[in-house]
Length: 111
Image (tube, rainbow, N blue to C red):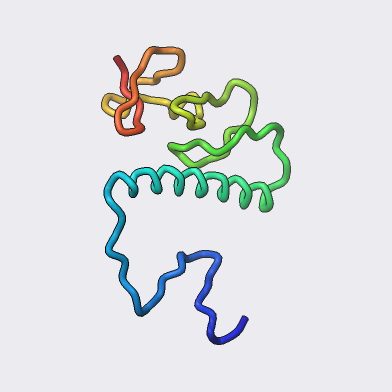
């Protein structure tokens, strides 16, 4: 790698001479959701390269960031993947598997 490069696979690129004025809050939220999705996919890729196959892996839980392995161990809600045990109300922590819920700011709440 040349001495001019300050690129790292593990850290975001930041130019030392410039400062961003910052995107609006709504753009930050949209970018944050996409960033979380990319992070989850990257975690899945890295874990897949590091670990031996353990059966069917369905993805990475958006809440605990662990692999979802095995039939009936995960669920999809709000276009996110959760372990069934991790899919809980953001306020009271009751498990929401198979129960009605609503989403507020991307977080599940019981009705």
